[in-house]
Image (cartoon, rainbow, N blue to C red; front, side, top):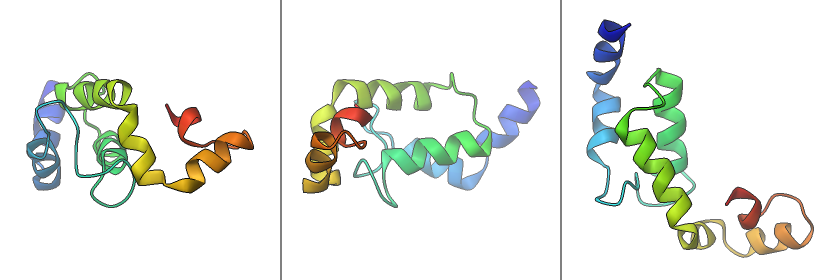
Length: 93
């Protein structure tokens, strides 16, 4: 299994995402969208990177510790969906 994980970690896109990690663990520029922590975690997970890998672990910690980064990316609709209890910013947090 270790050999497979090593092979996955040599994938060019996996390396690009891992190298995009900010000092606080955040991946990409935004929460949602193409260059985002959301898509990076999803992509790494679907590719088969171990969910205990430091890049995924630190990204999840960054999401937990920086909820203020969610609102600018979700915009006004996030608070509206929260009021309607339909999965807005607060539910994501």
